[in-house]
Length: 331
Image 1 (cartoon, rainbow, N blue to C red):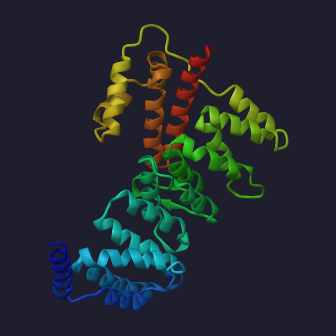
Image 2: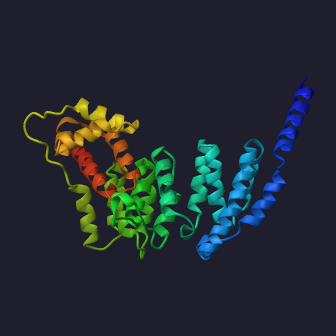
Image 3: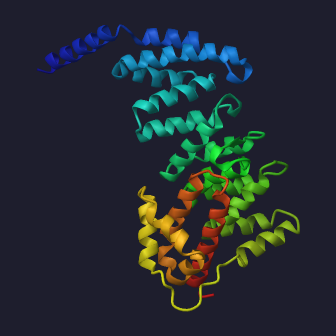
């Protein structure tokens, strides 16, 4: 019986190959012909010609994904020196397979990409999304920070850019703090970089016990007045003054709206932001330290949105977090 099953499987695979007319060797040959270039070094006309060639690779894989997707994965793993192929091919893989394994492979290929060769508006949202989903995208965050001048614009936000600071917030701010904090501490300790102030800001704004310890440790290694400011940031962070009197909006209303937004239903939260003008003051009045995990998760969502307004929202939620943390400490 087992031999029969094995023979049947082999026959079925051969049939699949015959139907598509394409094999792994065919795919390898087409990849050899089509890739091995850097888009940033090509003219507009050359890019158009190359795009047509890459379409052939994508079309070939899509004629028989069952057979050719495993071949594609093998080629991504094998071709370590062709960063653009690995980036582009991982996008093709993700189109057909959104598994955690594929996402982790994308993080690897995106982290190894030369950002000069790709559309940053496409690159950044994926890394922020995966970070929000709980994956470790710190390598991608380092790639972003170490690139000289990553910047792009969103039409709906006019001249305000998605620059190095906003992008770093989107990546590191989207992740669970326990994943991001150690890497931010290491980046913040590096001297003579153009991103040190960004890493320090992000580390301070993590607002956890571990990040506080990391900031305090960093303060011993930097000169004044920076060391004094870091100690001040940890010991006396900016807080939100609770609204006086009896709040008209309940804890349950805020919690429900936040949970709905996290589930992809933002209407209730949008209504709250319109109706309650100083909502942060009401939130710190009705919420408690027990709500901190939800607020942190909510803050990650806003960071992952990667808009020019993300730093403002992140700062507001950080102040709410620190205010609730101060309640917990009995300040």
